[in-house]
Image (cartoon, rainbow, N blue to C red; front, side, top):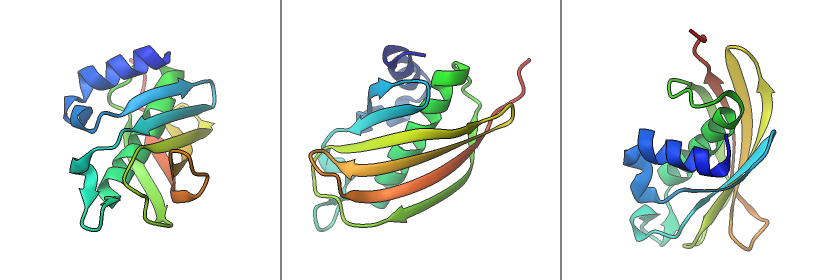
Length: 136
């Protein structure tokens, strides 16, 4: 699936994510970059992006990367997540850069790094495993 295919799928199948404004910037066979635009609704007290928002961005990034390889399988689901929050991200756009580590018939494993636009300092790092439903 292309960037446009993934964006259309996300908008159609997960309208509840729409208010976050997540944008698929780039995808290839092993990696994806998605952007979370600045949004006052995602900030927690102190002016930093909330942990649940960063979790959602990481989860969506790996999910879309898997779909880019296997096609629009809406029922692929997260089965495991390990996430480390390293520093408070500033208000502003946040990037998630994910890499596909394993793509099997039943499981896929990805790794994602989150950082503020214009900075190489990690704000969070996560590893996610997804269950892929059997093909009909």
